[in-house]
Image 1 (cartoon, one colour):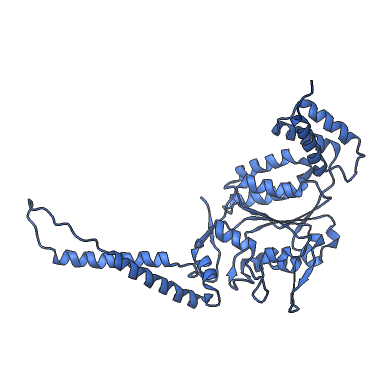
Image 2: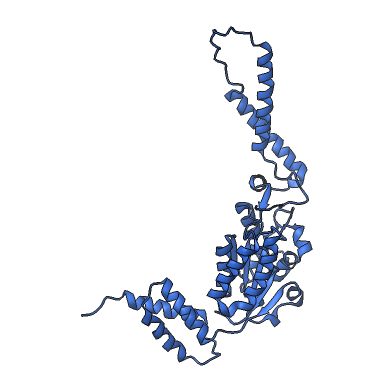
Amino acid sequence: MTKTIAFTPNNPRLLEDKDEILERLMGHLESLRLAKRAARAPETGPDEPAKEEEPLVSYEDRKRLMAWSRAIADRRALKNGLGHLRPEDRRRLLRAPREMRLDGPTDAHRADEIAAILFEESPWLRPAIDVIWRDMRRNASAGLGLKFRPILLDGPPGIGKTHLARRLGELTRVPSLNFDVGSSSEGFRIAGLPRGWGTAHPSEVVETILSTGCANPIVFVDEIDKSGTMYSTRGTSTSVVSALLPLLEPRSAAAWSCPYFQIVFDMSHVNWILASNFAALIPEPLRTRVHIVHLAGMGHGDLVAAAKRACEVRDLPTEAVDDIQTVLAAIPAGHTSLNMRTLSRLLADREEMERRPRLN
């Protein structure tokens, strides 16, 4: 059974909306009129046809009740600390589910199946998959869906770190987001941009949770070692690292104050995968909040195995693997070109060759 959590733990009445209030008002009015009708209804004989009665709630009644429910919802929103929000932002929160789901594997067996697929597809990423698998297995058994500690994948570019995060989302059927923070502006997308900035907006992570009803998406943050700091025209600053620190700490994430909505959300179930090429460049406060996994580069055997699987998926002839293997063999062991990006280019070239018309 899918477990749910309160996404706004400090405000249990936050998500009451006008439709629920209207339903209660309609039900109350129908009960009153039904009781009144029953009290004054004349007795009829067994052979006497019953009179056709008017509906308990008329169209005009419903219009009035709809206006009342909107007014009540607005007043409750103001009392619940939403008075500072614009009407469209308030409605955005009120439309979201009361309880958010924890999606992903429901037992250890399914967690094992997912890990086995990842191991087979990317054996060179086994150190990272192993960490995710053990956490996923334990939390799935506890009914928490997909949940693993924040992890930093440190290794050369092009070895499939982004692909691992995407495949994990596909296999677990959990929403996933991808941020490349080599440009520091991406920090705004992660934590949101508070009012006071010209382009204030909520966090994309929060928006994903509100729109999908899933409290444990996968968030992949690439090139964290290259992120920097941005400044507004008023002199205020923000950075990816400062935005991430409270979200990676379990206690602060469970009561995270959203800069945009300015209310508390429970972000402790979000799954974070960070990636870097040089972990030593990452500030110490961030490195202490993640499980760092150092990944080696890819070897010839890894790429040939990946080429075989890709050729099967793309329906390329068997000799394509031999041709790709010949090209890869010309690259010295340990060279930075031995990666998935090189393989992708070789596969694309081979597909283009197969599409060319045959010459007689």
